[in-house]
Image (cartoon, rainbow, N blue to C red):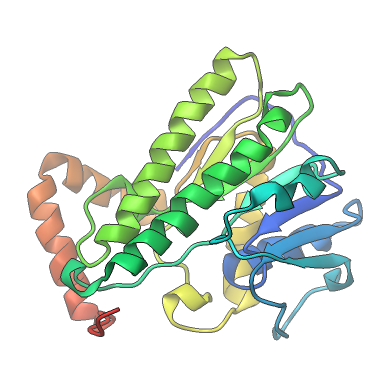
Length: 265
């Protein structure tokens, strides 16, 4: 599913990917770097770039800047705000499948800091770019878990629901301010080929989705739910018909998957 804004395609030369050291962020960075018009792709991540199989041409354009989103000092991003950054992709985030009773307060605080507060603070730094007449593609990884109750993902889903409402609200404000720029809410389910799904980054699996995300951001869309027609239209319809029944279905589905983390943290 996507919701479009009638903007013309935008051409970036100096995009910034937050959380681009691995997973879908790394795929987005490499797709951008493979474009001849792109001169540099800045990556902000707390982790260094690890070698990845099947890394595409353009990897030499990646410039890595180490930063922990749990840091309190987001003036770090002023070098990009005041520089030549002309596109923003925020892909950092984490979560674990576990019962709420198994999550300690430190985990809860860290989850909201990284998944909700950090993206909002970064967007605030770039908000002048979004308000300006110049096109500024901006995509934020949210999650389908932010659209409905998600047992075993109670905290993760809550962090993403906060981000969803923030994006929807700010997009109205951008529209009323006369800007054609929008925040793209990217809300997938589980993404194969990422560390989040329990494996290593696999570009063969993540690159097609990365291309779709970039295309929607450049088109000025404000919502993209991958596999909406194939999977999530029905899921969301069931949820809105009877959220309690769908919540129980989600609980049983995750329990049967064998992916539940039973370790208290």
